[in-house]
Image (cartoon, rainbow, N blue to C red):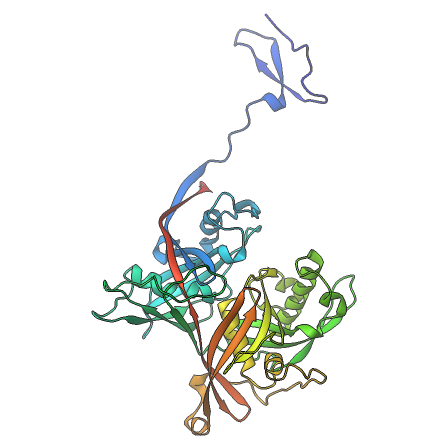
Length: 451
C-alpha cells in the first residue's frame, strides 16, 4: 500500500492528512489546494416579474411595487443582483444592466391613493461598478415610460374613443407631480408607433409629452438654494491648487450645478473630457456645489451620493434657433459625461435660461459679451406657485418661452411657463417630448444568499 506522497506538487505547499481507511493508522497526505473546498454559502434563486423599457434616451426595468419588499431599505439586494452590479461588476455581465448609467435604471410603479394622482413612481439609479443604489433624485427619461407602462398594465384607463390621455404621476423621490400625455390606440392601450423622433434614439415612435409641474425645490425646497442666481464656487482639492468657477445653483425637477464652461481654469479647458484627471476635477466641482446647496455637510459626504446634485457645463450655442432661446450643454451622470442630456436636466437648465441673472440666461441671451459678471441676489427665494397670494397674482405675469438645448447627440426643446412678480419668479411648468417603447416582459432571475 502506498503510504506517503513522494512527489511535491507545488513549492511551499501546505499538506493535509486524510486516512486511507478506518483500519489504516498511516495518514495519506494531500496538498491543501487539492482538498475539496468548504461548501459555499447556500444561495437561493429568486425572481422579479418586470418589463424592460426604453424610455427617452434611457433604458431600465419597470416593476410593480408589490413585487418588491415593502421597505425601500430592502430593495438594494434584489435590484443590484437583477441588474448585475453585485460584486461591483462594472460590466454587469451577470445581470440585465447595460454597463452605463443610462441603462442601469429602475422605475417602481404603484397605484396612487393621493387625490388627483393616478400612479406613484419611485426612481432607482443602480450604480455601475459599485454596490450602490441611489434614490435621491428623479429621472425624467424614465418618467416618460411611466405613463405608457401604467396604461399598458391597466393601472389607468382611457375612455372609449379617446386618442390621448393625461397620466398624473407623483414622483416619490422629489415629491413633485409629472404629467405624461400619451397617445391611445383603438384598443385603449398605448399607441407606441409613430413618426416622432428624438436625438440619441434611432427610429421614431409616438410623442410622449412629459410636463414637470411646479418643479422648483425638488430636494432643497427652493429654486435657488443659496438665494443667489449666480455666484463663484471655490473648489479646493487635496494636493491641488484651488480654483473658482462661475455657476448657478438651481433646483428644478432635480438639483443642478450649472457652470459657465468659459470660467473653468485653463488646465481644464484644454483637457480631454474622458480622462480620469478631468473627471476628478468635475466631481470636485459637483461636491463643492452640493455643500453650498445644503445637500451635504462636507465634500466627503457629498461624494457618497453620486446621483444628486448633477453637474452641467454650459456654453453659447453653436447655432441659434428661431423663436427659441438657445444654449449648449455638456452634462455629467454618475461621474461621467452624459451621452445626451437628462430630461430633468433639460427642465432645470431651461428654467435657468428663462430667469434673469443666471449663468444660463446670460449665455443664451448675450453669448458675445462675456467681459463682465452680474451676481444677482433676489431679496427672497422665489416661492412655490401655491404660495402666491391673490394680491401678488393680480400683478404677476405668466410667460411661456421655448428653449432649445444642444448637446453632443443633438438638441432638445423645452417649453417653459413662468410666473413673475417683480424679482420673484415661479417656474410653473416645463414640458419636454420623448418616445418610449416596451422591449420585453417576463421574469428577471437572480441569486441571493439564504437567510
